[in-house]
Amino acid sequence: MNLSDFDYDLPEELIAQDPCGLRDRSRLMVVPLDRDEFEHRCFRDLLKYLRPGDNLVVNDTKVIPARLLGEKKVTGAKMEVLLLKKLEKDRWEALVRPGKRAPAGTEITFNHGLLEGRILEDTAYGGRIVEFYYNGSFDEVLDRVGLMPVPPYIKKPLSDRHRYQTVYAREAGSAAAPTAGLHFSPELLSSIRAMGVTITPVLLHVGLGTFRPVEVQDISLHHMHAENYEISGESAAAINLTKQQGGRVIAVGTTTTRCLESVAQEYGQIRPCSGWTEIFIYPGYRFQVIDGLVTNFHLPKSTLLMMVSALAGRDRILSAYEEAVRQKYRFFSFGDAMLIV
Image (cartoon, rainbow, N blue to C red; front, top):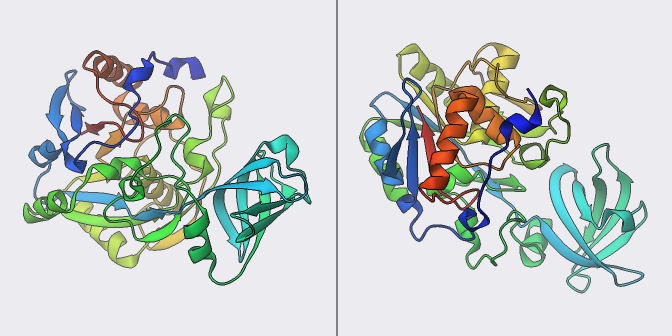
C-alpha cells in the first residue's frame, strides 16, 4: 500500500488545542467491526460497550518534561532538545533543533546552567546522543528545567501539565502521552471495575517510533524506531485468563496495542517480559491479542492511522474519519475518541 492511501482532508479548526473540560466528557465515535455504521456517544458511554469478563488494558507510562529550551554555550544561539530514550546514566537519545547547528561537541546550557548538555554523536535517524551535566538528582533538575512535550500542532500553551498525563500514569519515561488514556477519569475507571471488567496495566515508553513521520511511498519499507516495553507476571496472567475464559481484550491506545502484539509476535503468547519493539502494524496484519481498541483520531499518513486501518479496514476507517469531520469531532492528542469493537 502507498502512503497516499492513508491521506484525508482535515480542517485546521478541528485540531484540538486544549483538553476537554472534564476527561470523560469528550465525544466517542463507535466503529463496529461487524457492520458499516457509526454511533456517536459521550466517552462515559464506553460502559455500554464493555461486558463483564472483558479486560481493558492500559499503558501506565508517565510523560517526562522532555522538551528542553536552551542556548549554545559559545554563541548563545537558541537550541531545543527533545529527550527520546535514556541509554545509560546521563546519556540520552534526543532530537536537537536546529540540527544543522548541533554537530558533535556542541555544548548547550539550560536555565542559566542548572543543566548542561554536550552532543556526543549523531544517530542513524537524524537524532543525537547527548550527555548531561548537573548537580543533584536528574529527575528533580528536569522537573525544574523541562516542559511537557506537547506536539507541534498544539499552539496553545498547556496551562495544567497534569492534563497531558493519564490518571493512572506510573513509571516516568515517555516523550509523549498515550493520549487515548487521557479520557479516563478515576470515577469512570471505578465504574468499569464495578461492572466486572478487569483493568490491566502494561508499559510502553512512547518515543520516536510512535510519532516519526513516514517518508517512503511504499509503506512496507518504513522502519519503526524502537520503544521500550514491559509486561509484569500479574498482567500477563490476567490477559491470558481473559482469553482463556472467552472475554475480550480491549486495548486503550495504539501504544498498548504495540506492546501486546509485539510480545505475541515474539513469543506466541502473552508472557512476563521486557524489551524493545519495532513492530509496524499496517493493513494485512493479523492481530493475535486485541479484540477492540480505544483510540484518538490520528494524523493523515501516520503509522497510527495505518494501525487502526489494519484492525477495522482502511475503507471503514477513512469513512469514519470523513464522518468525524462532518460531525466536527476534535482531532489528535487533545481530541475526541474512537472505539473500534
